[in-house]
Image (cartoon, rainbow, N blue to C red):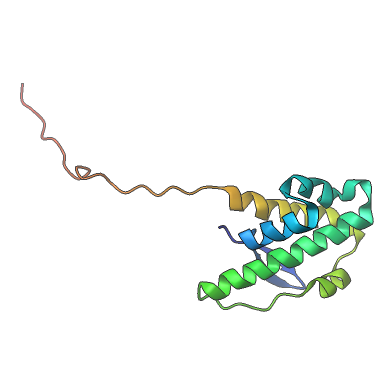
Length: 128
């Protein structure tokens, strides 16, 4: 799982798109298939802002849990009620972009390869 940050009230807050968040989205939106429509509010701007704020609260909580679990100094994030007083309609596009960035980051895969057994072996040049 990847961790990204978003500035909220002058502090960088961690976001994670954890399995807990995915499950909560499934419960609320009927699956991840409905997430895109939910974040756009299916044409209802106020519903879009409410859905984005709800998802942000879920992802902030996941980021907080992730940091605590990994020994990073964790600051308790604002809850959904506080977030509703933090953002306005003018923040919707930036908020949606931050959420999508965090979700995309969680889908990226990192592959670490170890050198093979003979990786340090070099062949000596032959004389011809």
